[in-house]
Image (cartoon, rainbow, N blue to C red; front, side):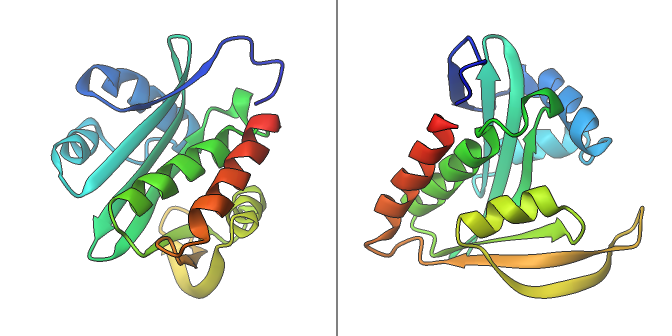
Length: 172
């Protein structure tokens, strides 16, 4: 991670005591994508994985996926704006993909705003390919979503590739 980050970055499962910080980060990054009830349902669901990244006491990253049959459907990847472009998003995405791999899931999918070039660059760097477009997906803006897929989470090469991506994130 960036040497300007002076405290260790801690990856952890989100727990009920983190929900106030989760809502604050959600509002900051998305303008309140999900409600408190929605996050509580994620915590209770056996098919949901909700991870956080903290610097000291501050929650600076949030990631979530749903395990659906053989697929990890990534629903959230958020990094506090002050900490973007420092490898934290890549680090958190790698952690989500590793969790999905350990669950035996075969692929990862997600939707991303077609205009979100920073996110698209990260996903493409980690091997995600565009599989389609959902027209007018984002109701608030009418913007299209691109549907991205990453296959091969269970391939013999994937753990090594994931390790390389994690090392890249840590050296950023």
